[in-house]
Length: 82
Image (tube, rainbow, N blue to C red; front, side, top):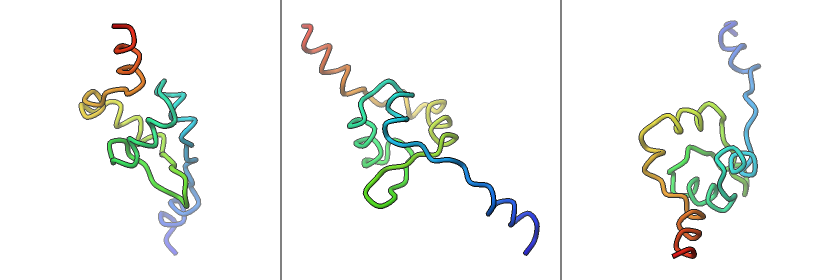
């Protein structure tokens, strides 16, 4: 096996949980799951759980796509204040 292929196989980027991504983004875990399910947020489903690659989420945050997403928890809070 070529050494480049072995490097890719041996390197395993740790996957983030929905709780870790929610804390990082400052949103609820429910919102993270909904965004993952609707393919707004880059994610993969392993069994019944969503997992996220840190680099993909970082790239998504830098992209214009992330600014189009509304935070459902903020919209509820602002409507409650009115």
